[in-house]
Length: 67
Image (tube, rainbow, N blue to C red):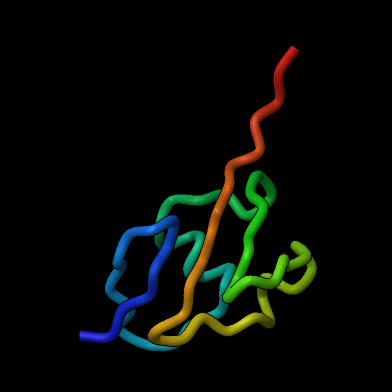
């Protein structure tokens, strides 16, 4: 089965998809994360056009507001 590596963990990927779809499928709210895709920072405006493919590496960090 094809996979991607997300935050150091192997995750199954049944088919290529947009980054925004990957985030939604895995419980991430796109407006509250910062993403690095294969070593490149991805602007939120690119989430819907950036394709996630088998073998890709993602680092996903949740943005947390504090006081």
